[in-house]
Length: 365
Image (cartoon, rainbow, N blue to C red):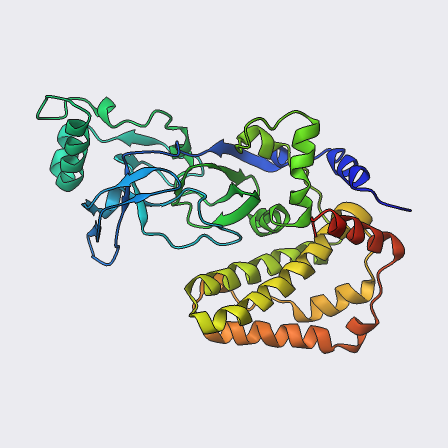
């Protein structure tokens, strides 16, 4: 059977379960321009200090020289940098003059009133005063919290809650914010109902399947101005493998890719190609498993056996370790897989080969 791109897209669009069905909330971040974003150095114990004034050209955000109390500063991402699997470390911080009141998945919060803000966070208060004066206000003091209240506070309900953050840099890219502390703009946050699914769903959102999503949006007239919105992401089709081992493999591969992308972000120039080769290898393996889950369900059982024998998790949250030995270990796993006699004997049937050819010819795989 010949698999055309249209047939693949149609088949994916008919998957009944969507990302919305397995999520507690799918929501948009803060507006892309704000006076509450600062370029900061987090080396100090109690405050963040900006080293220089500059302007972020992508989001047109003024970044002032300032010193801020850490309690109200959160790391910020705006989608201008490609974040995939893991989030790039950033010097940009977002000022949130709010108190988060509990540790539930969905948070209660309150805004600091001006007098309390002035007493507890005098540097922040001073900076907000400067912003107010720059806007032409004549008052010397801030009289109401409405002066710095966010226009849309809804995303605060899920601050410090683990989530997937999806940005649209030419195509959707997903990264797992395990701490939930990132403030983001120009993207979508996804809080899942089952926290054990975060790695699997992150991998799927970064797969070839996700590259067909714009076709589904276009067919269903959901894409207007090339701007990602929550309605579009809610429509993402979700399929789970029939075998638990496949889901475990995909989740573990996602953890490998979180670690590798973190290493790539911090690596010196000479080690980046070595790291990128591993990223490409493990991404391709994850993609094969995801494509089989969504479309063919007919991978050679020997392939699953070889992968399950080698691709295992070495410990809790190893993906956030900076141990270089893990990089060496992932290279050894790749070598073991490729050198396996059973792996070399694995064959793809004609149907699966046709799917890969169609995706490749359309620039998807």
